[in-house]
Length: 277
Image (cartoon, rainbow, N blue to C red; front, top):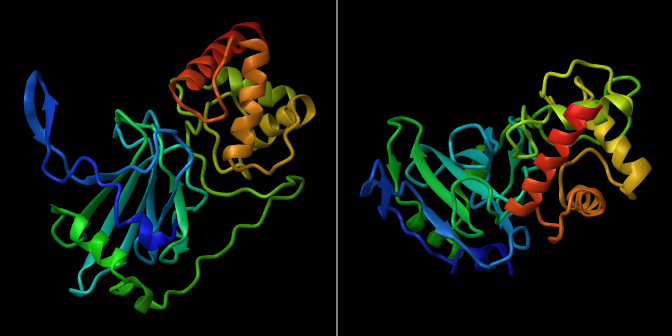
């Protein structure tokens, strides 16, 4: 599937759909539109519809319901600045806040994180000037029809590339945030990291993998015990190693995609390690 093909089909829940709230079956309206191309979380890559700057990221448990999401600011054909929210990723985007993304660059994978009933990518379009939301589908269909990348004309200054701190090896992609695993509590996982080289506090803040070192310690555990050979990015390879660990120790019987069952097993593992380590 090309990036243009992605936006030609797969539309499910449209802008303005009724959503239940406070006992009212139509207590609120859908603020965006959803695209879904598979029933399996994590299998479909989501391209950026426009070039632009990453201005924000969301994570499971932050109260927004977006799950793993990325917010890209761009300039459209009307000359106005707009934010595009792309949500419900199967795992965190590798882009950092401040990074420039080009049209068609993969920013997420359709997933189940946040408030969604099936694997999808949720798109919202918000005016930077007014804060109002509008139906993103017309702009997404323009992309599908090859009508240009307005954001590409901005010719931005590249964001600085962070350098690993002394003594910390391995590439680190993206700000991980306080809860990259999508479970309510991560103290037990941080205790595992502590036993594998992490020197900081048990604060549940996984930082960016450079300053805090939490993820570096946890990755050392996965490398030493569960055959992980990647970097510090919480992506498909790391989730596969986590799945091997959970299958062997915490009654997990699912696949390598971080859906509800895997996160339930990960939460069990966290609780047990918090109590015993």
